[in-house]
Image 1 (cartoon, rainbow, N blue to C red):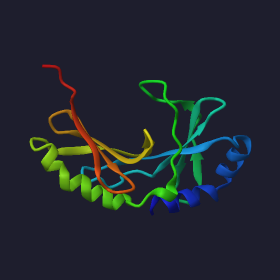
Image 2: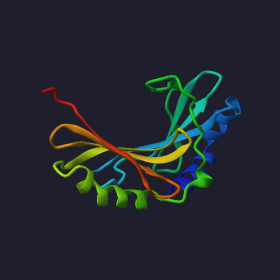
Image 3: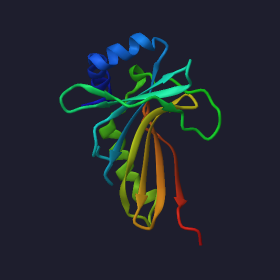
Amino acid sequence: MNVQDLFLALQKTDSFKQWSKVHPQGYLTHFFCQIDSMGVAKTNWEIGYFEPSSNKITVFVMLDNGDAEIKPADDVFQKEKVAIEELKLDLIKISQEQAAQTWTGHFPEFFPKEQAGDGFLILQTLEKNILWNFTVITKTIKFVNMKINAIDGKIASHEEISLVQK
């Protein structure tokens, strides 16, 4: 199921309808799921909404039965205080499957000595760019990350972070 369909399914759930009545200022910020080394979802998607008045994120977990579970509102995870940007799904042109193909196709080029393990995928807006944000841990205990523009499919950035101090 693509993110637009997931979003529409979320909006039809009773849990979302009730939440949005209490939080009318809330807006869509991200989609999150755990992935395997090929960028394929291993878990149900989580959909995040930011509530400006409380400065908290509420996450809805899409369930197999079509309903959504609401996680308790939590503080925003961020390095610096920056505005939490709205995710505008109508602008997305690159599907998760297309982004995963870019991820797997360019992984050997950007990380030639690494073998991908499991990780996570976030669809989010950062600095006005809608990005598919792939992060996995490698077999050599490094995080590798590749951000792919969800509008034009171009690779926005890639980086490797060693978790072991030498």
